[in-house]
Image (cartoon, rainbow, N blue to C red; front, side, top):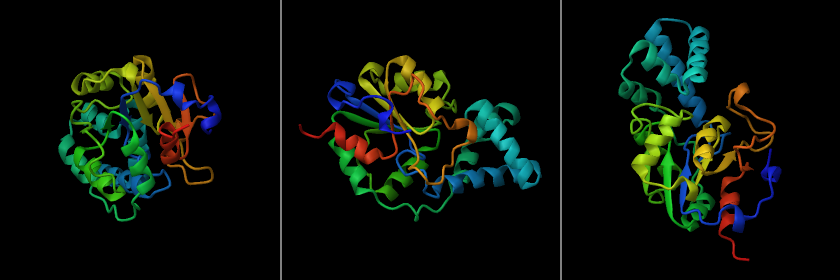
Length: 238
């Protein structure tokens, strides 16, 4: 998929948008980066240690919880009562030195009018460390993490209701930028303009097979595999 899914007219498509909401993982940094696989493997290792099972069994259970609950952590909380703070600290204890700074993205985000927020299923600390590695410090007005929603993850509508309430945004004047298609269902229903970020063609895709859509559904307004270029178009002068 690419931006050709629908006619891209920045003047009309994003007219009136005054709040820009960004997912973090595989959205603000490129999907082919090795950051998410590091987190993914930390989750597998956490479950190996927790249940005393082999890696293959752990990974199967991990992905089952992810699909059923929205995040593996939410499944572990619901079915095993884990300490989510300990879990988040463990799975996000990774090396971020492989993430290159992205000055083009920093410039594009900085030029956007209005508020810029991060809404992530990860932790606040993970978001801070990751945007620092990307060179995006100081560009976001607030970070809303999984703790802020009381561990209710996207794509659940309750997570978005909590986010809307805490952030005070008007969904009808806001854009949601995400890498997972199902995470755009609830924001679309609330009236947000939705953007799906996909991997560059030919690059490694870390999404699950069932997460990959080949034709963007109606709740996805725009699709791009180059977020910085996409955002830059929104502030280009005619």
